[in-house]
Image (cartoon, rainbow, N blue to C red):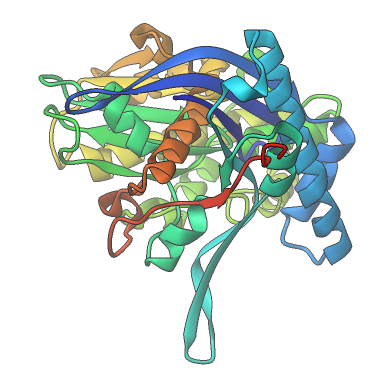
Length: 390
């Protein structure tokens, strides 16, 4: 089957699209990336999404509008991908769309006799299915939450399939807005696995740079700002005491914990300690790296050896961050997704193409050992493609 995967992460910077071919082998699936495409979000849209995801009260009309608008943008991205690949929508079997997370509350809160746990991804799949004519599967996370899981991370299903090695113990690190780790002990696909969000990825760095530049820059390109600053040891030590970092997996997090409010506090401390903005960016980058190193030492190494760590996501392009990881994780060998012939930029969209395929086949896509769900469940909601003219 030819399947399109669509993804926008917690960095809220645009849509990644992957066109993949999935084949059933005798005892496993094989997946091949045929083409990829990226559509950045318009600046004004990203600003509105950041406000919407802040947790502050917003108009329900804004949420309603952006859900439909993002559906249009996701559909357009899929169509552009097909054009690049030289295919028509009729030559594609399926679309899997993660959508855009605007809030994630896996711990939930009490409402009467219910413990209500929730997550919300927007980007209306009915619009995608109507514009493309292709059956679309979306909204993958809520079913895992309903089954008692965190609803995240979901990409370890693809990590297990594509990174597992028979003789070498590996981990996969995604440095998106939030950082997440998957540990794959040596052995066969489907064996023991551990995966969880470690804490911030690029999110805190990006937010401080965005404020520093009044929105003109969205990231610390090449880690240059951090490299020009000094790390404040006291502030770093304080942040590393964050309760989320010490809590045991399964666990997931997002902008609610490591977003604008965290940066608000960082900037108050920056002023109090008379630090430069570059010092703050350097300290936030060090915090990101050290929180990952701490997670490896605290939760992975007690389970077994770790020989190779594959790093993907936007943060792989930040040399300051990668150097801190290399120093903290030595002698673990740091590699890239590309070292295995995979695309780091488009891996997550590829993973949601694979999850959509699992759903269409009536197979579970969550890993209860990872998310904490009570059982394996089929993920997502299916919106049929356009009915052929009679």
